[in-house]
Length: 287
Image 1 (cartoon, rainbow, N blue to C red):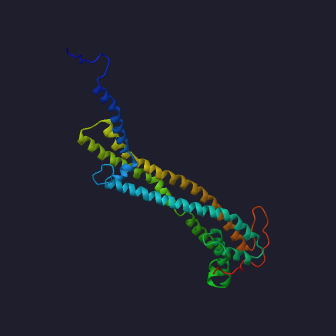
Image 2 (cartoon, rainbow, N blue to C red; image 1 turned 90 degrees about the vertical axis):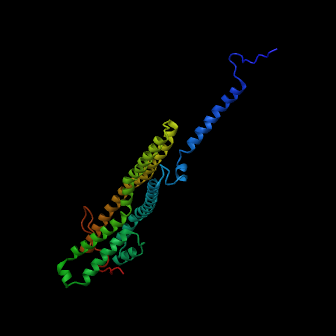
Image 3 (cartoon, rainbow, N blue to C red; image 1 turned 135 degrees about the vertical axis):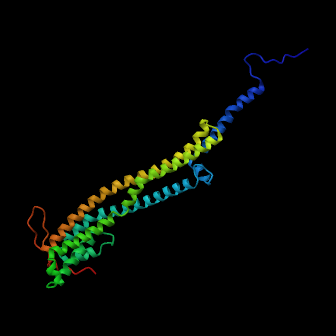
């Protein structure tokens, strides 16, 4: 008369079976939601003064790293274009200058070069100094400085000016490369500090409660490294590239000094070559 409602050994009741089947799904969804709230997008989207990982200090750190990144990219691109153009033209410019039979034509060729081309500016400053010294022969200027000293002074100033222009932006790259990781670390320390305070106040010290806030705080350190590493690599590359160009500056300046001061270009290991065409002082001053 009574039905046996007991469950056979080893079997699972239907209700328990449904709950067991739903449990993994619920856990998976919960973990997925937790992981979704650990990313960089969640950190940026949830900016507010009460967010322990992205409050006002965290926002300042983030904006600073963004500015560092923009400045770094700007100077990397600018220096890459400038150095590539200079190194691509310098051999042809110097070769054309020395192979031009007339000094007047050589100076005219230099005047036709772009305003950003440094070798032509050095040659034009040297020619201008030589012409200026020749025009003031017999004056106190000539008595105080002979031709060689006056040209040497002009060449030193021209090389120093062009070297300074060539090194533009390297200070920014060095600053970004050296301070970027520390700025990111500041954001991480600040975020971890507030995250731990919030965890302590909630009383929940489980791994899921700790991993999310601490993981978001570590994003700032990664961002700082992401900004600094390209800046350091670019700085080292451009220092090496500039060293090669500066060596050519010195070589070209010495040859210009020999030519405009003595009337001939003194080749290494060779006797002085005869002067080309007109006297070296003949080139007109740069306009």
